[in-house]
Length: 65
Image 1 (cartoon, rainbow, N blue to C red):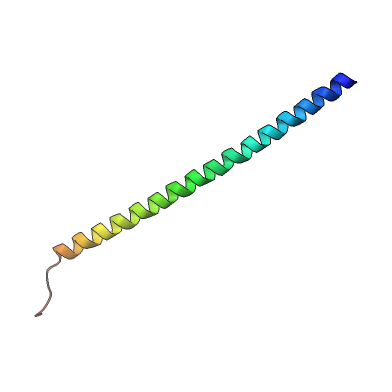
Image 2: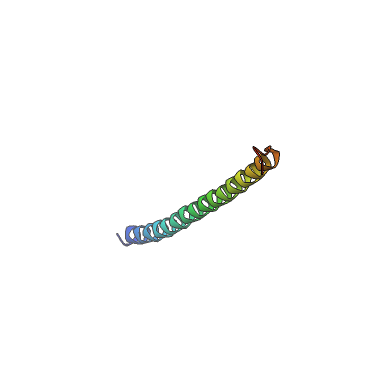
C-alpha cells in the first residue's frame, strides 16, 4: 500500500506542475493575442491616416477661396 501512496503523491505533484505550466502558457497566449491586436489597431490607424492624407492631396478646391 505504501508504494501506491508514493505513486499517488508523485502523480499529484506532476499534475500540479502541469497545471501551473498550462496556466502560464494560456497567459502567454493571451498576452501574444493582445499584442497582435494592439499592433493591428496601430497599423489600421496609420493606414487610415495615410489614406485620408492622400485623399486630401488629390482633392480639387471647390468654389472661390
